[in-house]
Image 1 (cartoon, helix red, strand yellow):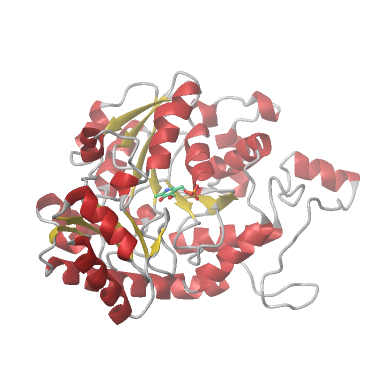
Image 2 (spheres, rainbow, N blue to C red; image 1 turned 90 degrees about the vertical axis):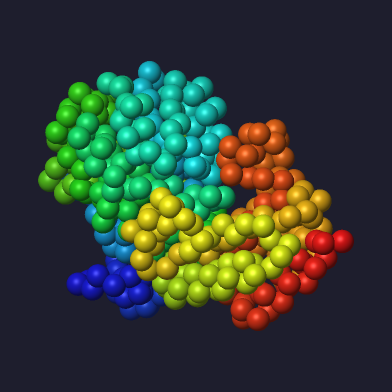
Length: 430
Ligand code: PLP
């Protein structure tokens, strides 16, 4: 596939037809295992002398097409599909950091990722140091000899300020530290590898699936990071791995291309921890992917119209949308969101938490759910739901105020979206 256009790659990369039946649609290979051609073939597969199917926990032909397609769209070299976005974030770091190591992460994260980093990885002996992305140099200041990776989200909500990918990736490269970017909220709009990121992760549950049917995730290897340049910085890829006959991943994988990072994740973490993506879900993500570029354009268009509408309403004291940033937020929007500004919009109601609850209860078209990226419009009032366990000052630190409402604007006709918002805003005044 010579095209570089995501619209074309989403339909063609990684698959033409089934060699046995000529079927055009990607089959759902609902199988656990694969017959080996011979004893030698089996030994070669297990020894990584040849790549091929062994067992569906580690690889599957339906998942393989999804992995190839996502890698192509993102401009990476290879990918690993997993059972959820959470599994993708966890593996992306566990692949590099061991007990006693640390990671420097942006503070602006999805709450589930925050929990994973602040609690579960900590329990596993990996310290995550949180820094404010307003100042890229904060990443350098938090770095020490045991720092193995930097981590951030491209377009984190609730603030919706694009992360300075190029600035932080460049700082990391000076130390031999890769930047891992969660691009869940901005597929098609931003390609983090173009700005120097080394690894991209997604919750495919959101825009890639696009229809709110399936949970999944993916880790994409940019193939653009020299893991050997600072071998003491990346011991997981540069020292013998006892779980694979003492393989040194940066060396062992060389003949297969610059895929050491993602191959290691597959044959060690996915093998051992087992968060495999079901092939049926991979098929559903492939279906979603076919229209991703179209949908993202329309989500962005509708969300901007919603932001403009909200800015005119007197019940709304603040609109949070990339087009409404000032200062550094506006600069980053201009630099990173050149293809559209995404489907998320936040706003603050003058009436605080009570108005937030009334607004949500009055919605008829918007679904009240803890999700984003569905074709349908979705809304949530974080102070009474996702962030209700936090104190008001903790909520404020994450950008959530009592009257804050988050919208994931869908693909319905814009008149219907604005009509629902208008009547819910009226009800919120009561
Ligand atoms: N990353 C982001 C930005 C998310 O919004 C989410 C889920 O909301 C995740 C990761 C986790 O993904 P999943 O729910 O597929 O595990």
